[in-house]
Length: 417
Ligand code: URA
Image (tube, rainbow, N blue to C red; front, side, top):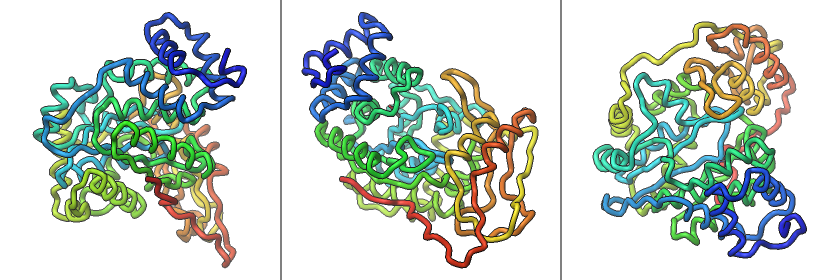
């Protein structure tokens, strides 16, 4: 009620409610009312910091100090075609920084790193803490699901927020992300805060607010934290889905891949290395093949076969350009929705996803296209999904014949430290 009426929550009120909710003493109905009051009224930095600490204290804290290596992690607030973790973790590990990357599954139109990796035959997302430590020592990088012991208050609260329309509160997003990252025990953290139609934060002001809140929470907890604000009005790379994004990531590790994916991967790698205090060139790790070796070792250590053919969807359909000109817009949210409708994502937690489903686009903003050329290829196991996916893409792009083209927005918009 204090928050509903616009008052600040005291430290002891915050400690109590998080502890009582985790134990089941505070019911979901009560917590959802509080989450809604926070969404509408906001929280001061002090309240957000205390809320984050209370969520950390609800579970275990991991400790990688026995590794004797600097550690760095990256977190993206989620986007469409965002496969960056896949090439990034092996690149940074190949440069001598251990990467304990706890990742999530997708929900709604944004994809999840674990769903993508699970399309690799045999690959396993769940590791014990002992397995994680062993892999960090032997391979240098691990990408896995957060164990049940890490910030259990957040697990429960995030699921509740998801079904009560209270995900989009900046203090709740910041504390949710940072409680997991601080409890995970990484020494350095680089945040990729997305802004644009395909992101949680649709405008620059709220993305900046979220980034600043998270950077200050990280620093207060002794984690070297930096954020990049990056564009998510256009999807990343040329694919959104699961196996098709793994394929694109492997292309990057082989020295190719789409320019924007390479640019963002290298920018985040440089930030992670700098934050961890290691002077190394991530481009050299790519060129020398060391990053690819680390990728193969990472997949193998988690029971995956890096040489196995990736699953392909049973059916595909092409959408062609209705006119000639220059592609001036490709909307991330629409592409994400199409991939989701094709079966690459899930509508509710725990649903299976199709490994082969997704969208491939054959032109990016700034590219010239010719009437009739393939603009998108849609992939799914269930052809009855094509119609709704195509509908999502009908307003997703613009082709202009005007010589005065609008300037393309930069991929990396700002840096907050
Ligand atoms: N990701 C999280 O982990 N938590 C949020 O609240 C939003 C995105």
